[in-house]
Length: 109
Image (cartoon, rainbow, N blue to C red; front, side):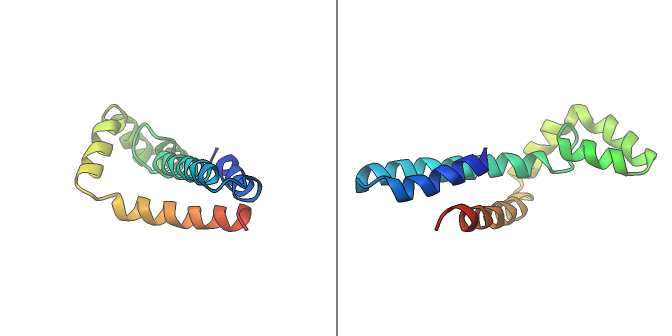
């Protein structure tokens, strides 16, 4: 979805001639890109119940996979604690920022 929003952002910037209307659509597309990139980065974190933890469990030794399985019911609480304590802010912000720049450089000229 982030790629689709980036493509739309490029199209809106080129095709809409009314400045006010273009600003609204461009803002909507930028928010769409950012929102989907945040979801992508969060989902790939190795926090139990997210896909990142399942990938890690698939490649990690059996003991690590068992620990992740036992922690899975607490994944949402772990995520909330990490967000409230600002542990994830730098990582998420940096990853989302880098991906955002890459997408815009590919689809917006």
